[in-house]
Image (cartoon, rainbow, N blue to C red; front, side):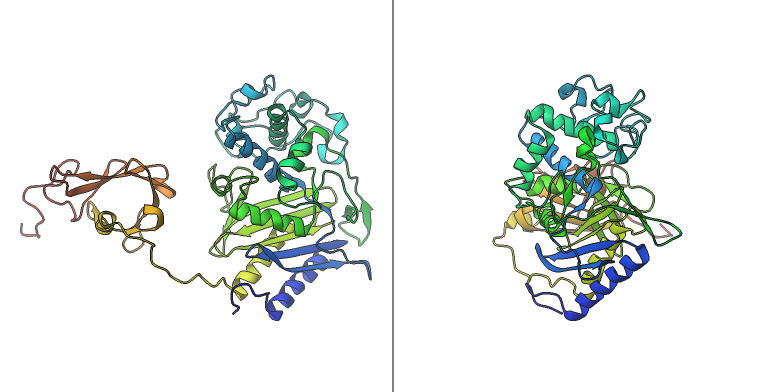
Length: 458
């Protein structure tokens, strides 16, 4: 166990080193760099390499592939927060002539716009962007393979369109907007569109022999917003800290939280997608972040908000080493060996007697719930016994509350009073909660049998 602010225990550090050593050997990666952040600072980094005496470190650049998409999503959310666009705007409103119909900005962000996964041939990741100079070259003759809004279908061209949207609204290149609005404010000076030494070279390893082949590092051109960036483990931990708590110079905490809220139905296996962020569950934890790959490179970045731990894994090999899985495993090693020590319990700074009177037991028909008071006049509804629908509710200035999660997300909770001012019931999206099950005299839909509760002989 450690106290707040301390570095990792030697046993944890050795477990992390052992895990990346096994990953580099089994994944046959020429090199591998990994790092772990806790409480928004780097607490461990390590590397393995096939070259004696020349190991990379957390400041060595690797290509991060589709982790680039999260940066593009941040730029789009900035436009929304400034009132320049709405996420439910059709793309055509700001970028006419693309041929993607009524697909919205939000649908592009969460890969539900129905666009194809890839560009027309040749494969964009291994060929120069100059082969696809225009949006039409990226989308081809059949941009949409599914109706917009019907399903999650990962689309690289979709993020090309979002990058072009940023350029159209900002009036500067995607790369310039990225540098000025994200990289410089967050101090990510080693994240660039082109490699800057020291950086790793990309390699493919033969499937049946321990020999390597150099991979091309192409400038992706208009496809850059989908996968162009080079970065370091240290810079990506800075980005992870931002994704956890926001930064008012870049994006507010509430907008960052919106990014990591599921925006499309959960896929098979428990994975989902927010706005530019992948969401995965397992081992009792929910992680957000993104995986990435381009020929010669694989990358993974995951964050556990509850434990305030982030992990990065970067390798210079086309396939064979599951970097995203490795990053999740490194995060799990730290969380399991050194779970976060919770903050001390503290009472609320003040109490509202009227709100306090609402707490306690409530019933929806014969089902029993508890209502608790949280900070900032919020409420928490929980089924007694753990089975049933519950949610957290935030207070609104009109005296009602809005559900924040699960079935009641976005629904309104309000207190309904009698003529004398006493509380009759709670109304939650037309569901009536009373102090007693089917309370006589309360406004229960359909009324309450005047004979009341009875036994078998009644």
